[in-house]
Length: 263
Image 1 (cartoon, one colour):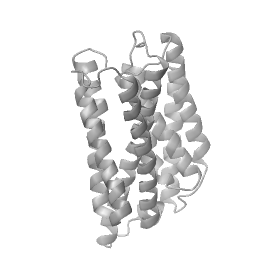
Image 2 (image 1 turned 30 degrees about the horizontal axis):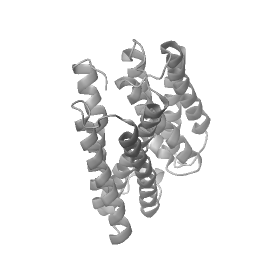
Image 3 (image 1 turned 30 degrees about the vertical axis):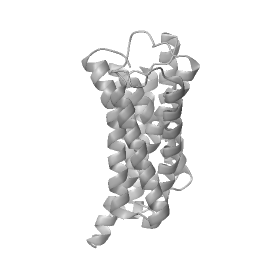
Image 4 (image 1 turned 180 degrees about the vertical axis):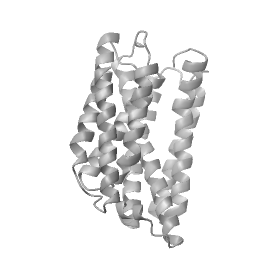
């Protein structure tokens, strides 16, 4: 339990420092970066240690949730370390800590499911896509909150921790673009490598993932051709992410935790 405990403490320390930076009007301070980087390193080592014991990668519900949290933390540290949206860590790092805590307490304790390199590639692409697009969903919520505050002329102190509206919107669509590429690769490898994508235990995951891909694709097309932005972009982003959450974690929750079957 040492590795997850260290990661939890460092995640919370990074969050506290980010909060203080925002409250003091210095949202771009970089002192939290090494704390977050070390937290992510210990988070990753927790999984690596479990895989060594299980003699293979663990992709069960709590493990997958923790890995998505790790991916979000790494991306947030990368964004914030370059001066882009460090305030995102105030939300992301506690989420990463909670996902790791869930894995440490309730994580899979049996044997790892055997996966050849093709299915492992598909699984890793899926986790990267979910982490990236989950980050996009958080950015969309920040964008909505910022627009709402500006429309009501309520210039809260937390607004100082956010980049200008246009910069935040640009970051949102760049993140969606990256996530869309990863999701496309996930679906492509699923078609090529996964046998019978429309089997009973996979059909909901396949259909919902496809619908999410279509919604994200339509949003990017609308942005490119019609200049979609603001509330419309937020709504489409959150709808697509909800479909993706249902596709992956919804199906894993029902099959693994309720029915005690593996996907």
